Image (cartoon, rainbow, N blue to C red):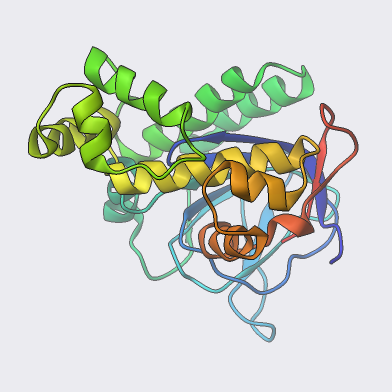
Length: 261
């Protein structure tokens, strides 16, 4: 596959940030995650078929499963992805709809674009880029970033993170934090904004991608996060992000990563 950009990838449960320089158009594709695309140096362009005209935006929201292709040759871009079933994702779709690519007014995104660009250019820590991305998503949704405060859910997420290679059920994790399955299910959504099942899938997927980008073979990355094999991981990545993990490249384990779409 052709390389269409080079940059950094940051992952969190329920989403991710892909930020860097675009080279050439992506392939026509779709994915289940909501995408917010922000031009950090110029406009980004989208079209929904190979024959449709390119439409330019300073920022745009691409709903889940909408076929599209993207280009911003030579431009700096930030691609933010969000689980459509999360509280944040539902708020974004309530505002921007679920059928068509929608532009974001410049005045709503300018300060967030500046923060993301500055953090990237300065080589700031992943946590700072994650905070900047989430602040942008929540601002567009009209919400406020949530932080885990219930110690039982904090213990649950720590328990999950330490056992990604193992089969995990809601009942198992609920038992670990001494809650009934029903109470745990409700409290988990209340605290995280995402269902237990979706959280577990996103956490496994993003950890597998982190391992793969860090130099682990895709087969080992898949097995370390409870995917059946690299093909299973590839299918899940395509369904979520619209691309296969093997189409992503990096210069070195700790350096910028190259990406194709």
